[in-house]
Amino acid sequence: MEMSEIRRVGQDLYGAAISKQVIEAPVIRYPEMSYADAYMIQTEMVHEYLRAGYHLAGKKIGLTSVAMRKLAGIDEPDYGVLFQELGFVNGDRVPGELFLKPSIEAELAFYLKRDLTGDHITAGDVLEATDYITGALEIVDMRQDFRGKSVLNSIADNACFGGYVLGDIPIDPKTVDLGLLGMVLYKNNEPIDSACGSAVMDHPAIAGAWLANKMVELGTPLRGGEVILTGSFIQAIPIERGDTVHALFGHVGEVSVTLI
Image (cartoon, rainbow, N blue to C red; front, side):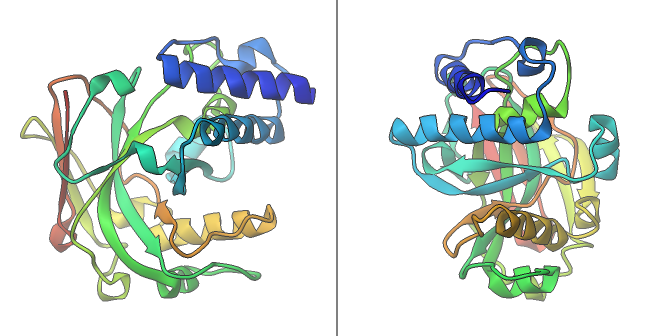
């Protein structure tokens, strides 16, 4: 794709996110779009947020399960950017008009206390660089139609980031076997799904290491102070106004949100 096309699509996706209007999927408009093009479009979309006064909070990892990557036809996860202004606290009542087609994912948030740089960053390095973890809910959203389904559409659309809710019980990640940590998700007090941390690339810190190495490769290492959402334990659960969702992460605690 030409840079002028990449900028246009990034601006269009940002405009759709702000106006809450569904637009045509990028791969329909540009069937030749590549993986690299999709990430450049995401970068343009992020720049539009920053120009509008939003502030970076961290990163998110998506497609952390083997099944979802096979379905998407890719060999690795994807990533997107978090914004402070779209972060919420545990138990918040979040306006539904902020989203178009929201769904909920349950995951862990890693709060970095120092930069992750160098070659061959490991899960152990991620744990050492993490100040603490909490449970989290990610609100995923889609600003485009569903024709021409492709992971490239999701990547271009900032990995379908809509918002996030952070737990309020800080836990030292080295005191918990995160691969065995169980999670149960409830919607309107009904159990919907459950899984454990091994659903996230065998261990959430392994997902974190994948992202850390990817960011080093791109010349933008993860920095101390960033929050990293390491990928959902389960598939996304659609929600609508009036729904309350809460996730129980064992002794890591509970995270909840109500869409109003």
